[in-house]
Image (cartoon, rainbow, N blue to C red; front, side):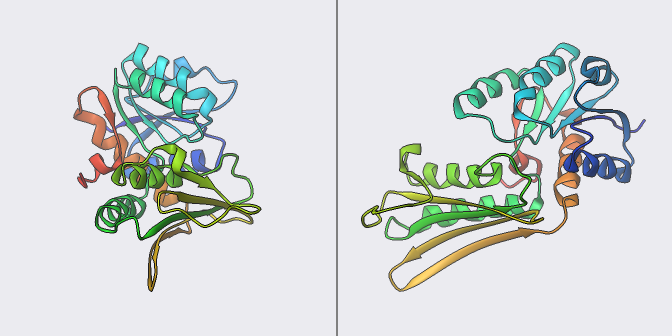
Length: 243
């Protein structure tokens, strides 16, 4: 029997892409859900739920998936740090993949960024630049947030080191700060660049997405991967075997 998938946020751009990718994979889309729909009834029909809706809905989606013992793939971004920490603890009660980006290429970028952060010392200034379409509601993107987490982790820094853009007389750049710059405009699907700049050289790692289908295909791949997994929170690095 084919995998039965419920899509939450079905009317959005990613929701439509998720439906197309699920059908392309041979899975059955048993429920396409959005605001106003009966989430509990739709979730009850599925083997796994894919949620790319809105961050305010995540807590209820996790609760319903736990109640109905369903696996869950979360691609929603924009959660405040403390709220996400609480939600991750709740999601651990079910098999769950939670990632800010489901692209295979972006997850390779995560792995390369971790390696570069470990090799390049504090004399290499780290900056992250991301650009998305004018309709995106949160900043920085979930992908950029994950890149920043990786850099901070490898350099043993806290979130206090982050500089969200710069304005005015900021003084010279310190060796312990990490810059993040969010650009918005047009129909850009998603561009991310991690830059390590030293005196005399600069290394840039860049990924550019031109089709939302890459994220949707990754989300469906994650849903399939969850089929035989025990409860716990995983990410695409687990799905792709990059850890």
